[in-house]
Image (cartoon, helix red, strand yellow):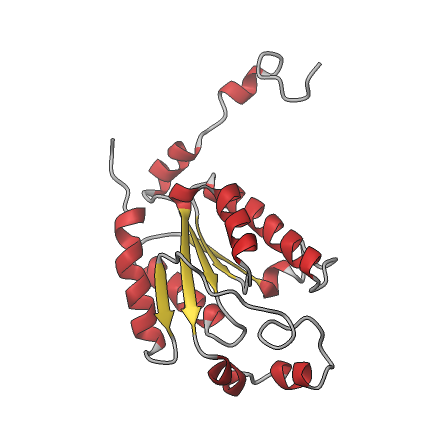
Length: 204
């Protein structure tokens, strides 16, 4: 007997679908995947984007290192293998939120094309919006109030992206936000202009 055989458990045939929940929330669910170096501005932009979506009547959920690595992924390190698993779990969690009709704002370095491609495959091309939060390494280091880059350059932190671990710039990002050249307000406006037509709910 299969665990989730719909013929044995007919309730699965009646479970509410993503479209039902999107209809209730009056929004289309998408995953906004922000990638970029530490200090580029991902978390700040995610916070203000969440606020702008809320003001516009949309419900979103931010996922970033603070609420992922301190909980569901607190057993992972920063090795290549664990970085891959970190993003895999985040993508799966994002998919669960998406199936509830929620807009997800992800803020993760996700440093390689391979890792980002894996996340895209899990979430699905139609629902994955890649946003490259771009700032040069020297700018990111200047913004680093926690001193992580300095510690990494001294060898106190291993596998730190941009220092002794590579960051591969996205090849096909939907949006590139240059936080070294524009304000947070303009950056959020740029993302909102792209996003709103994709999340507006319309009856079929």
